[in-house]
Structures are given as structure tokens and as C-alpha cells.
Image (cartoon, rainbow over all chains, first blue to last red; front, side, top):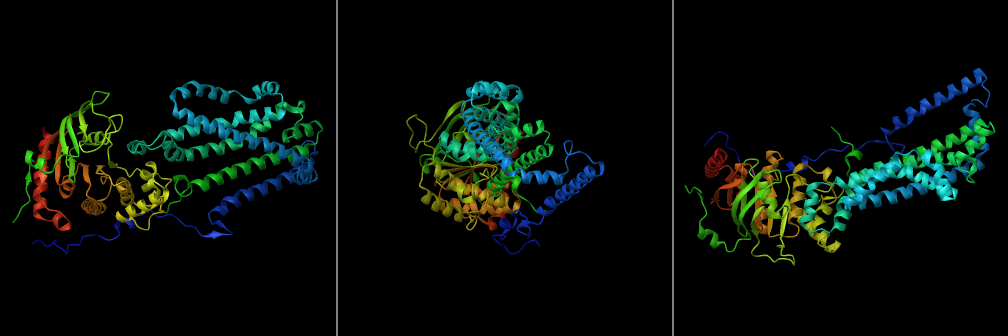
Length: 293
Length: 272
């Protein structure tokens, strides 16, 4: 017998489970993961410094407020005009969210239909692209004339801008389901609906959510741009209308206040869609996992 | 010393095991680009057998396996299921499980939900499906990992989930396409042992595609050696070593001897 001979053992115990990947668990500070704080604090510090510099520059050069108001004045205007501005914000946000909802419904429905029928995709997708590449500012006047109702035309404009990323991302997602899994579903005699429900839609979820993140911001931009085009001719009184109005009256602090509200809304929409995406993907998708090496 | 022997199966042997579960007759497969992947394969897969399709890459073993599963049809010849029923369209109601080279799990679903998938597709009630899937997971040694997502499992564990999914409908035949090729040797040995035990308990027919001589000899009752370009059957060998096989068999001289013989056959097949 050779010297190599050892006691026969049937199982090297635990090799499998010990080979599991290790995921990082972080300590939390004030309810947030420790690594999140620098990402919040660093831009905050820069922001405060920039605002300070701005205020100082305005004061030092004695810039009149109808050219560039300082941040403190803008803040005061925001509080003083809160009544008018907040109701305008509400109108703009309502159009934004309705457009986003319509973009999700139409985008996902079209994507599902397109993946069911190549013919449908071949014949309709080019028109979706045309809709996407045509500048909204150029067709907004036409839409306003045709739609009659100003709110409806704003909604249509915002929807046109917002729906394409959802459509194209969802199509990509539906087509990128694992080929072997599709084979497996075929083996088990899955119906089209079952394959869609249990395989293609979940596979498309990360792509759809990436599209949603883009479309959220675009819906807001679409709503504001369309209102700018509709301008004073419309009866709407969204934030864009307030900006135009204040501009004519040289109430520049108010322009800035409205601008800040739009920006903050955009940031809030981005954070909300990112948060939804994180909630839905955190257990399984590569993008939401943190690995420890 | 009683050396296990390799023999070419005879007509009587085939008759003894009754009607085969799958009968492959004169099957060829030519792809659209002209490649002749499989040429004139005749093979009967008996009930309860453990058959390995062994050959170099490009010998059409995976193509053959996929055709048995009904993924892609032969260019000529037939794959018959003499003992199973046929649906209205005349297609056999293949009662099979399939394990791919990759675990091919749905990343968004837990281990349990992945194993439940075939049951769900067959319209089995959720409660019952959960029970059956949980039992199957326990059987492949993953009790306690029901709610783990594939990303949280190791390569070997993912393959176990994949095998559990393949077996959850209690199929008559389990087709495996190089399932352990991507795993490290220690994990592969363990999975080989556990697969044999499952096969012994559950009594399904196993068809195992591999390019490893050692794996095929360790597992199989029968080894079909294939050659490439065009893919064809070169030898059909019986492995007359008794089950259950374990680590002792893996280190025995008879195992070494069998591996040598099969290696020789494989070399012939590659050289031809």
C-alpha cells in the first residue's frame, strides 16, 4: 500500500455552504448605512459654501435684485409667495405624475405587445422613435391647438417626452430573459401568458426601473417645457407660467424661487424612483448588491 | 480479485430491461449553417438506467440531449417514447427533467420558488407546490435554504437547486447537460455522490452528458462514447461495477482499470 493512503472519508463536510458568497452588512448611523453619510454630507457642504459665496458676491458687488438676487432673498420670497407657488407646484406635479403614469402604462403595454408580435414591433416602433426624436417644443403648439383643453395638451406633451425610455428599456428587458430558462419553460409546456408572467416580466424589471428613473425626470421637464410653450395663452398656472409671469414683471427672486421648486421636485422624483428600484431589486439584482472581497 | 468488466451490450441485455423508455432511431441533425452535428444515432435508453454520453466537445452530445428533450427536432430519424402517451398533436408527453450546464435559476426568485416553478406551470395549487418543492430541496441537502436567493448560494448549491427543480415533478427521465463541468473537484465529487444516491432512491432514468472519463465511469451503468465531426456513436459500453458506489470505489483499482479502458475508447473516438 502506498504512503498516501489515508482513512477513507465519504464527505468533506460543509464544502458547499462554506463557498457561499459573502455580502457586506454595514453599521448604521442615525438609521442610515455609515457609507451613505459622506455621500449626503459632501455635496451638502459644497452647496452651503457655494450659497455663501453667492450671497457674498451679490452683497459685495451690490448687484440689483432684478438681475441676480441673493439666496437669502430667494428664500424669503419662497416663504412669502408660498401660497401661489405651492398651488402652481401642485398643478405642475399633477401633470408630471399623470404623464409618468400614462408613460408607464402605454410603454409597458406596447413593449409587451411588441415582444409578442415581431410584425407589430416592425411596423410601430419607427413611429415611436419619430415621436421621441421630434423636439417637443416644435410640436407643442400643434398639440395645444388640436387637443383644445390646455391641461390635456400639457399632459400629452409630457407623456411624449417621458414614454420612450420606458418603452425601449422594457423591450430590451423582455428580450433579455435567459435563453435556457425560455427553453425550460417550453419543456414544461408553459403558455405564452405564463412565460410572460413568470419569466419575461420579472427579467425585464431592472430594465424597466432604469427607464422609469429617466422618465421621471423627463416627465417633469416635458410638463414645464410644454407650459412654457403654452405660455400666457393658456389658463394653466403651473410653475412655468409663474416663471414667465414673474419674468415679465421683473420679479426675479420669484423666478428663482419657482426654479428651485422645480429642481427640488426633480430631485425628489429621482430619489423616489431610485428608492422604488432599490426596494424591488435589493434581494436579487447585481446592481443592488454589495459584495465583500 | 473480481474486476468489474466493460462489455458491449448485447441484444439479450436490451431485451432483459424491457421496452426502452426512449428509442432513438437513425437520428441525424444538420444545422442551418450546414454543420452535421449528429449523424445516424441509434440508441435505446432503458428504464432506470444511468447512461453517460461521453465525448469531446463538438461531438453532438448536447445536441442529442436537447433533441431527446424536444428542444429542436432531428433532421432525419425519430426519437420515440414507446411507453408514454401522446397528445392530440401526436407529440409524446415527455415526462422529463432537464439540468443545464449553468444552474439557470431565476435570480429574482428564492430557491423554493425556483423549485416550485415546474409545479406552478403545471397548475398545481400553491400550498401543495410549496410542500413538494420544500421536500425536494431537503432531498438535495438544502433544507434551511428555502428563502435564499440564487445570488446568496454557492455554485454547488445552485446546481443542487437546479437538480431539485429537474426532479420536482418526479419525471421518468432526468437529462443533464454537463451539469458539474464548471464546479471545483471537491464540490463535483460530492454532487456526484449525492446524484447517485438520488438516482438510487428516486429510480429515474438518468442521461448524463460529460467530457470527463472519470465522472462517467464513476456514475454510469452504461457509457455511450461519441466522436466529433460529424457527431456519432463510437462505442456503447456497460460498466459492470455494483452500486452503491462511493469513495472506496473511486479509489479502487477496478475504477482505475475501467477509466483506462474508457479512456482508450475515447482516444479511439477522437483519433477516428
